[in-house]
Length: 385
Length: 194
Image 1: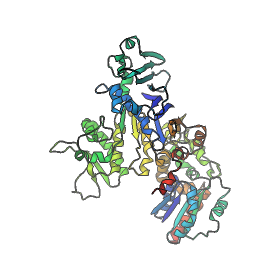
Image 2: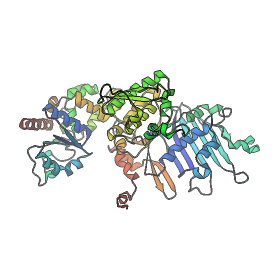
Image 3: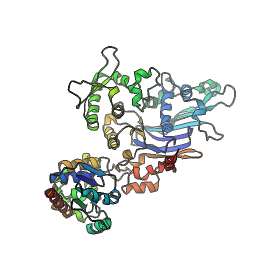
Image 4: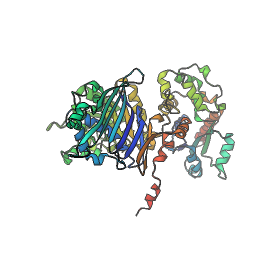
């Protein structure tokens, strides 16, 4: 299933969003233009729909409450609304789903956050429409979405499952290398890769070894001297570890544990692992970090490879600032979204007519769209003192 | 020695041509586009008094190689060890000129390939047009998917880079590409001299 369209109202720094999404969607924008906030919508829906320890109220509280979620530029209308269109496939016979959820503070009393609307459409037929009579009779029901309730989401279980499987990884190498020293505190779902090794450990040995073999093949192309990669739990305390062998070490120098890997090797390892893991929507935040341009240049090609494989075909949303990542004229520019900061909040748009013209004539996204994300006065930063 | 080119594919072609004459490129220089080559031409001249420099660029829409050289050169004099070569019109015509190799890559009859690729106004477009009739596996790498907003396939450089490294025969290609024949001659002269 892929997300084909997204509409937002009053979400974070967006007053209004209405954009199509493609199998590979690239989000471009200046710093603080809202790229992460845009990706956050999908993690929010995942948290709302989570069967254990999820739900609308928790997803809101975890993000700092309605004040933090609602767009500062929202006018009188203070409802936050998310509308997401999903499709099972490309043909018209496939099921098309629309899920809509809106919520806002109740105007009086306990000032709870209540669902103001929740709708599900399946191939053009509305199969859920809240608030209904029972909701109006018992307002407490509106503190929960139907999405988060197994009994209520039966008819649209496929989309509940889809939200549940959304993957996000923004591996921070230092958090992984120093995980033991930094200690226990870890965010739910581990977005920053502190528990990446446990994730590897939980995979069945057969699948794990196959994936590590594939990853080792890629690493040997990208990391000079790299030779072998293996999963090696600590013999004393059983903690999971990865070990690599490099060519230039003395043959008996032994295997190096992940804390000795370079930041770039770890980032690439994490990236390759999530690409091989599952077939759900994948959110990648600045995959270019710590990586050499020559490797970054290959990221779009690797993503295409993955998508050619029917079993692993998955939608990927990528936020990036990287010229190298975008300078392949083969990138399908229909999947490019440009975020622009304005006084009344950020706006987001697909590429326009002039930009498509330039791309049809052989220019790359890096040439045509990326310059628009540069802050107008950036050169004056050099004068900073 | 140095090899200065305007894109990845030209760099791989340059490496192949140097290798064929037994020259080892130690320093490939590239920074996207021929504007870079042109702006650094004076620097290359200075460098070539110490270590040979091979500069490869595309003629693109310039009237003829002599006109392009003169307009770039201005008042510079090229030292002997600066070899400045121009692919007429683009490096893609040098690839197309190896009709046998290209036909094998695209799995199409070699009769479909142009006899004189240097006379084409846009050899890259010709290559893409030929590739769009190739079997799916190769086509989907070289040519943008139907409906996609892109001018070529994501694997364009990778596939043609592999082709140049492993399949392309410069000697065979030079028979249909006079500018390549001249480039090979100058490079082998350089190799004989140093």
